[in-house]
Image (cartoon, rainbow, N blue to C red):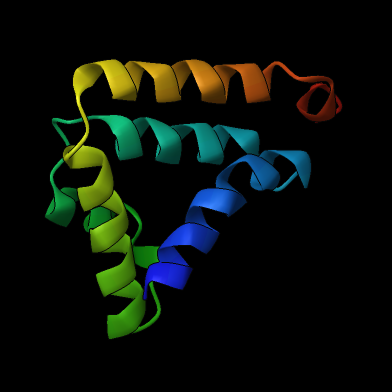
Length: 93
């Protein structure tokens, strides 16, 4: 389960690089680090990408990791993601 959470974290910036829809990625990232979005709301938003109980549990744990972070850490994460979006690798998409 922990491996799946790590893979999800690693895949976020790569999705933009792969050209698989940065707008969708940005919306998911926004909901991921938004402390006002609860785990059930997050799961509901990602429902079309969740296939089975294990995936649902992993998505819940993934969101819970962000809910446990301080506001400063969440702001730093947002800055990191913006740097990735502005990178030369995402500029092509």
